[in-house]
Image 1: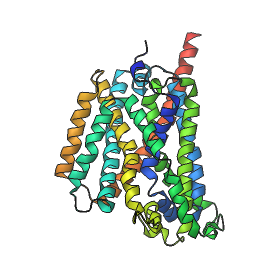
Image 2 (image 1 turned 90 degrees about the horizontal axis):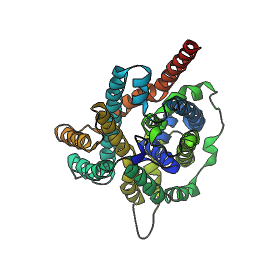
Image 3 (image 1 turned 180 degrees about the vertical axis):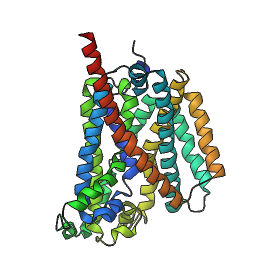
Image 4 (image 1 turned 45 degrees about the vertical axis):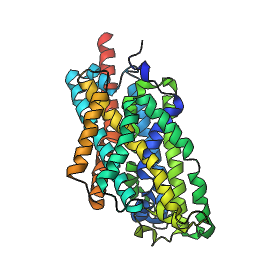
Length: 366
């Protein structure tokens, strides 16, 4: 019997987990970031970043095929030694918990700024943590089903963004390559952060029911994220002028302020309230994956005790210190640098090591 058979996830669930993580992190701010970096040609940088992300993710799948019934922690133990598995578990746990904390803090800031300005940040954080613990406690399969539910409930969002296009100015996108190719290439690293999250494949791979479709899953998940990012980026680019868009921290919210209905005055408030579900697609899986790594480190099958400990640690951290919006931005900047190492550099280095190791072993066996 497979070690992780009790928590297997389907092909579609694996797609929605990875895509949900990526979209939750970047949807609100990606138009501003691209506009600041390269202007309205930012959508081209986004497409190039998508190609790089797919390449890195396919490398992860290629590496994990060498040890299909185990996570990257078992792979490190088998190829390098027990100490490598221990170090890998500690480092990945810290990385996953950092992402979970950074995205949770960002969500608290958004909720306080747009929804509950008079409510203490700690209270908002606890309200978000309570359902988080309940879902993550159920394990990967429950988190995957939650991602499916949020995806279905989110299908109305693109239609809401079609309304502002009545006042769109498509000439804002022209001319293409207005400053040449160099600024576009220079802005590509800024897109890597928005495709972060596919390193979860290192842990998710043995949980896949059909591992033969793993490559297709990572291509589809990243492509789905690209389509979402392109959609919101182009909507903001054609609605706001190239100079105005950089004035808004979350232009994806500001563009909704132009929509008015007789039965609801501020649709952006409704949107933010619902978008908290999408935000949770980042911190819930990462909170589970972090507790999985620490449980593996102590050779325990049940992650719930570790999850509760880290849940309490997050709550205590919010009680003693709640970052401001500027400090939250710094947390995300650090996360962007960390994600480049874990999501892009680590897969390449690990692939080269495993490839060289297998070639040496084959030569020794001849």
